[in-house]
Length: 260
Image (cartoon, rainbow, N blue to C red; front, side, top):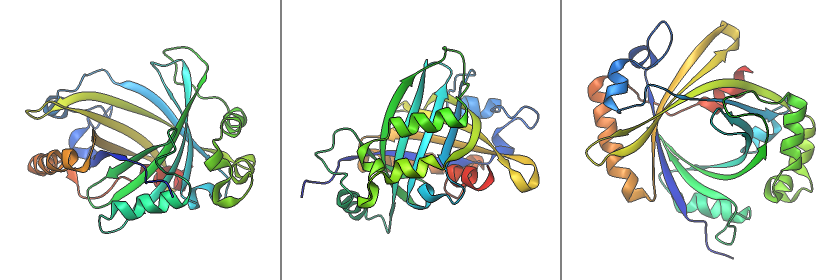
């Protein structure tokens, strides 16, 4: 068996939207902009997931997604497989991914540990780009076109997951759109080391209540666990000191799958 994939890290922490967003237009407060030296002008992006009504793909641990950012003339297709990490045992999650064929011989997929407040999750992602549209637009194709894109570009490990021939393509044949969500990303720096940080705001419609829930997430990337650990601790301490931290993990994808 080939060695496991080598993982990198992304720390993701959730902020209280009532304290860091303007209540009228839901943009970052001056205090939040200042804390992370954020550019006041965000990049807008539209995201939607595809699955059938039974969420067959999602329940198998996969999330096929199409995204459009206003500064790129392409549609970004992402096929992400998630593995839970129990008691911090990253090697066990990497081994589970290896058993599904995601190993070091695979140069097309990327392994990343998403490190939240309580939990870690291993994500294996394959991204593809399809030309389309103009810079400055975040418009996504209709659900039928998006479904065809994801089917046409489906990588082998998604297509034939679990040893089932064309499993992913067949699941997408019955898929509909979950979304879209129009999100914003702000880029800045934080701390003495000038860590590059991202603050994203995702307004997710809560269907039964007829309102939007604003998910505010601050994140940074690191090459390994040691590089991620200390800045994560310091960031948590700073956010707790400001009273901004929500002591829970991000549930963006779950919220979208539950409400669209």
